[in-house]
Image 1 (cartoon, rainbow, N blue to C red):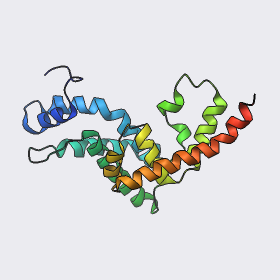
Image 2 (image 1 turned 180 degrees about the vertical axis):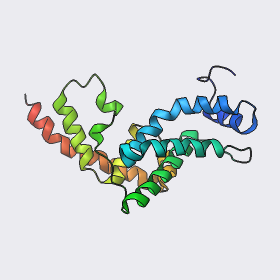
Image 3 (image 1 turned 45 degrees about the horizontal axis):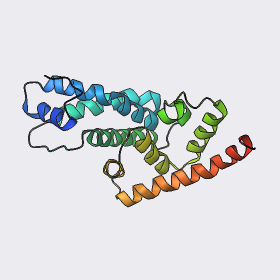
Image 4 (image 1 turned 90 degrees about the horizontal axis):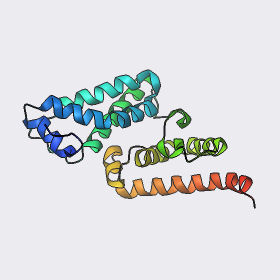
Amino acid sequence: MQNNNVISDEELYQLMCTSHKKDLAFKALYNRYKTRVYGYCRKVVGDVYAEDAFQETFVRFYTSAHSDRNVTNVIGFLMTIARNLCLNIKERNEKHVVEFKDLSELDIPFIEDDSIADDQLKKAIHQALDVLADEYREAVYLQIYSGLSYEEIAKVIGKPVSTVRNRIVRAKTKMRDLLSAYFNEHHKD
């Protein structure tokens, strides 16, 4: 098999479905997406159940690979599996809607970037994220951390693209409002 980075997700998925190289193709996709999937599971169900949800996501992904299934968006498919498993775990164990864990525990690239040297700014961003309603925070997380498009997020959460777009716009507007106080206080001329 060629270098895994040159083979597209869709080609690897097809190899999983139709080839004797199923395990190699699966391993390549696993290595590409394990960090994103685990991060999402940890965010939704916390450390206690994250590993179970993460492993079950990839087990279901592996066992679902067959030639009559057409998957054109592998990361979207994986995130849908992960989301459904996490929601089931939350419902089964806590009997209430998803409450996302404190985002300050997560490694979020746009926040943990070394170019942001100001710890107070990081704290302000984390606090702004924590204030968001769960559905807004989830949409922002899927867009920024997982790198999904509006269309992909819509498929993952089972809502129309317009709803996803509205949630992200509202979340960013709310964060901008919350952070404006920080910038007004810390960046006076």
